[in-house]
Length: 111
Length: 117
Image (cartoon, rainbow over all chains, first blue to last red; front, side, top):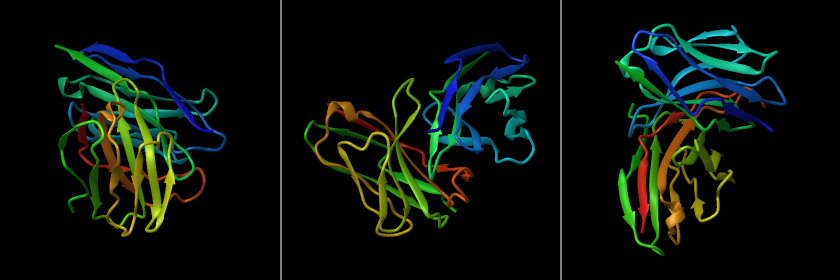
């Protein structure tokens, strides 16, 4: 069965500093992996996806993630945080005909 | 394209009442999903459908029913509302998965915030 673990429930950074949101996954086959973002009282928006092409995936708003099969990780990074990045982020792994969501990481950006 | 639309945006129900949450997509996606989101718990899959006339249970189906008579619509029915069903409900849709491991991204609606008292 597929599963995903987001290692931090909350992350706090200062504006202009790097962001790292950690995600480990478990899958019995080569998975598709996604990061979604949810701003307060909004729906979920796709940030980026990995589907067995390049292991370094670039997404919207300057975010990127690296697929590391040996570490079963798919961490999300951004070089410089912006106030508008404050939101909840979900790491997601594909299952058969459905997706499996992590519990989420709330990112706080301090001015 | 409007994408995935959900109605209503908010609803308060009394215990034992019933209601239907509506979901419509205009992207001609075969796959549709219903999730509930509770604080700190991520999204839990309630039901999903891989095409008109086909539905299947997710992780937390108890207390809910669905139907899929058209490609566009996937309503979620609560028959006897309970306080445990207080949550935010999201509908999503996607293209069919290519194989057992490769899935297309899901597109989400704006959500329905339901309170049962």
